[in-house]
Amino acid sequence: MKPKIHLIVGARPNFIKADPVYRSLNQLNKFELKLVNTGQHYDQNMSNIFIQELRMKQPDINLEVGSDLHGAQTGKILSLYEKVLIKDKPNMVIVFGDVNSTIACSLAAAKLGIPIAHVESGLRSFDWKMPEEINRVLTDRLSTFLFTTSPEAKDNLINEGISDKKIHFVGNTMIDSLIEFQDKFEKSKIRENLDIHGDYALITLHRPSNVDDGDNLKKLINSIQNTSKIIPCIFPIHPRTKKKLQSAKLYNELLNNKRIKLIDPMGYIDFMCLQMNARIVLTDSGGIQEETTFFGVSCITVRENTERPITISNGTNKLIGAEYEKIPQEIEATIKNKRDTHSIPTLWDGNSAGRISKILELYFFD
Ligand code: UD1
Ligand code: UDP
Image (cartoon, rainbow, N blue to C red; front, side, top):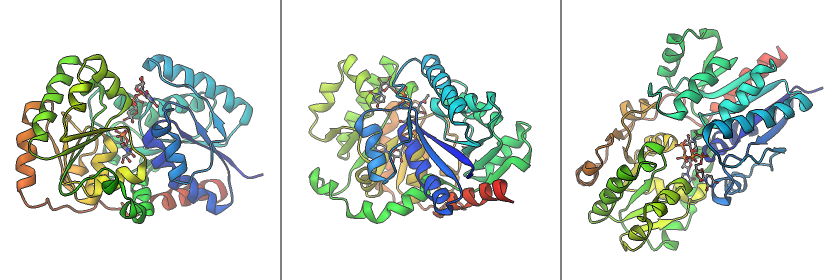
């Protein structure tokens, strides 16, 4: 009987990180693989569109948890997934990133003694106000295989007392997807479809620290309005942010600005086309800091800290903190300069999932 492995997806970035690992393990033809979708994200453009565009197979198991408070959402996944584990008895669970689905499924597996592999291990913002930091640290503590994307992740894990035998520097599976689909990004017609000619800023914002507080949100939107006087903006809007803007009565104000294209969350191919061709990106996303680093596109991150410091040391990323009023001048200064130099971090080479599957093959068959 082939060893059975579950791969956990749920939130938008999980699909992008998991797909290369699934494909690489599948190619070995030595494992029974099951894709488990928690349903943390559920709108077509936050979930299914990624399954379709990445040509993933439909999930084998759908938990359909939907949105809720953190404790309730994490608890629901924990309890539903525990039942699945007891029935299906996988030999390993692979989790990705730092979302609630990651920690919830890890906890369920750990309590049943099932080994966990964590992809994108060891990143630390050292900011315990971020739900993701809690998820990362706890998931790493529970994992048997810790697959890291950058060298400093290992130092973080060693400092927390994790044995270096568990840590494997494999590179970045999100960049595996980028490299795999790059020719599709180049062929996307999204700029013509959106009637975009020339330079633009691409904006994504969804961190609770930026969008959940009414005052912060107001200041941020004011800055985006001012930024649009400098450069046209494209703003694919995360559902969390859309809801907050609507309840703060700021949504229509943005919609009325002809220099800002306020659009639904986008599929991967079109979004990546917009990202690689942007003059500048303004974001609070984790993954987009990495993708802009790979593309060499200037990135301004609206956060006080980043768990991805390599995007600053090697890449084109700059933290601006919560000083929202500085955003327009920072953007103006950046786009007046020559494009930033950058170097692609080590092992962000498209083969990270291959390295992961080799390590797991050795574990199960050596
Ligand atoms: C989650 C992750 C965050 C990640 C982000 C990626 C946690 C703690 N947070 O944040 O780390 O960067 O996903 O996008 O896991 N909603 C919809 N439709 C959907 C999904 C969400 O309308 O398909 C709305 C709901 O009102 C929901 C809110 O967005 O309450 C937030 O969703 P949630 O999954 O709790 O957190 P994200 O902000 O998406
Ligand atoms: N992304 C996308 N469409 C969008 C916004 C983001 O395909 O409208 C992709 C983005 O390129 C990256 C991933 O989603 O690959 C990042 O997701 P997000 O910013 O939601 O999460 P984070 O990385 O902050 O956890």
